[in-house]
Length: 250
Image (cartoon, rainbow, N blue to C red; front, top):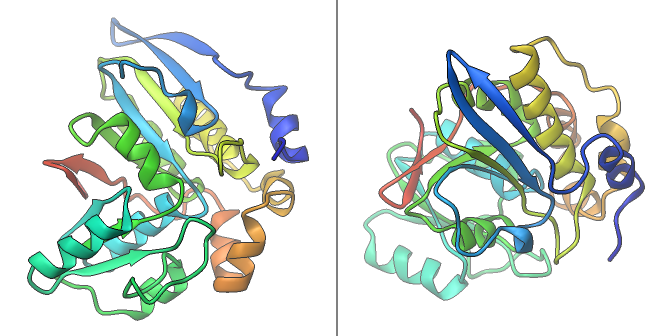
């Protein structure tokens, strides 16, 4: 699957493999980006990582924590997620099959509007998706990982100002190909970081989403409100961070 039109346009502004040296309060580090999870280098460098899978893993993790989940544990494989549910009291697992279809193997799909309807307060949650959790697995849960999306780009940028290590912005992509919404979210984080939370609007975001191969899945399984939130930057301050193998909020 080749790049979408929106993805190609965005790459004209942020070419693959770019890195920028930044000096903040006399600290120096570099920001790198990859536009699909398969391009995360091996061995994985010691750095701060931001994993971006806008449709849908990153956005689902944010909503799960905002819905009151005690933590969100990522899984690259369905059977491990099911084992977690069986072994963990009151656990829920959220996920989809590799082709994005819903499955009775999971308690609910990773759709924000459906997550908001469930009472998850105080419950441990596992998540398995076709791209985002594989990106997390490739980096390793022992690494310093933040979760980014279009909806929390400004808050992610704030967290990155606190680091003194190199930063890797990782767009998960879809089935080995870049997708415009992930690259757009990375660009939002970069702009917010460089411009110190200068107000952003959704100009151009709709174009990336409308040309994405992932958007039909969102429209089929979610609601109009799910779409509208994703094309509206800065709608939440929640930034999931991995600790002891699970995502929590600060």
